[in-house]
Image (cartoon, rainbow, N blue to C red):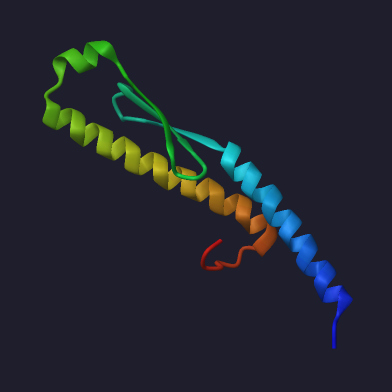
Length: 101
């Protein structure tokens, strides 16, 4: 009835998943706007860690253009962070796309 091998496998998988989660938590992706005036650091968890905007650019740009550039850089950074996180997760899942992981 009770299969110790399955329990050990589950425990091993949980250990691996916790290790990968720590890797993803430490992962950082830097996205830069095409003109190089905005730099955004995004963690593997898709949280924004920092946004740097060139002071000279900031004084010359309209709020609408700034918003557009920020949005593009954020979206690109999040996409790259998700891609890097999926790559790390594929170490355990063997490339399978498992919902929730």
